[in-house]
Image (cartoon, rainbow, N blue to C red; front, side):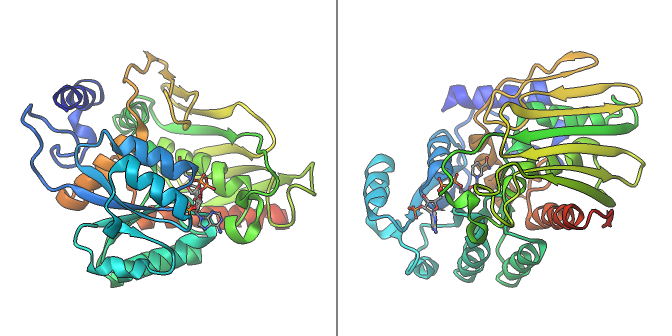
Length: 368
Ligand code: NDP
């Protein structure tokens, strides 16, 4: 653990820089002493593809630990128990997880299930008194997102959204450069987010479970990215939808949407979200005095970035490891990441998605 600590120390202090964090560092340790503070003990709900990735990444966390599971598939529970040394008393299914309220060994539940289930699961977890970490998109519309924020507030628990890019070193460095004025006045953002989706029977193409198509899944990266790269929230949206395969992409499941966003400063963004094209993972932001290009921009990494000053040198660290250590620091020490990961941040993206769908449907400019 010592060498990793030194590595993270290097990432945060040398290449990214302390001012990125609003309070002095707990996210990454600054001494070589072993970490002795509180550990965020996490149960993962939904042992699918991304849940598995998060579990693996958590094996090298310093401040967060996988201690429990909630799953509808008993065979997966057995496998995870053995692989991650999870005791039987920390294993639940979707019918009995309200009993987590009586389990002092679990501090937070990380919801990694289909989008359409997030709201109900978040509210149920909040009632147990445990913190909620929920994957993006936080729900299937802004009203759901707001209900989740309100429910977690009422239960006095944190609601954090799995925005892993907010902990990614090159992304953080680009945001810091923008905050320091190194690009001058931000003027334009281009985001391209997409891949060709396979199996037509998967939940991602089922409106009830997904809430939409590519926009909910991958387009959200361009929305969130436009906001953190430009440093503003949009005030208007226009959008155009294209559908080449109405059998695979049924009513309410978007295949490809181009959308434009206008910002209070006059900056504009032009983005593409698609389930029908590969190799789309690129952000470009230009300001009056410089530019930054990230490609890949939001994949699992390594992220690559360059600016008018040259390549971004920050090393790759597994995103979900940084995210979970960062979320533990946020929960226990109030250390805020460079861009928030709270429920309110999630609601902002959901409002934009609602507006994009409305603009695509009506052909009209939607004011936010
Ligand atoms: P998967 O289909 O791979 O896994 C979802 C899991 O949810 C299932 O394996 C299952 O686990 C559980 N589940 C519960 N109810 C259902 C249901 N009715 N239908 C299907 N699965 C169900 O999806 P992903 O892991 O790829 O995605 C899950 C969430 O994570 C989504 O919200 C997605 O947007 C988000 N995500 C985020 C990423 C990121 O980079 N931040 C990347 C990928 C996904 P079990 O059998 O244990 O009950």
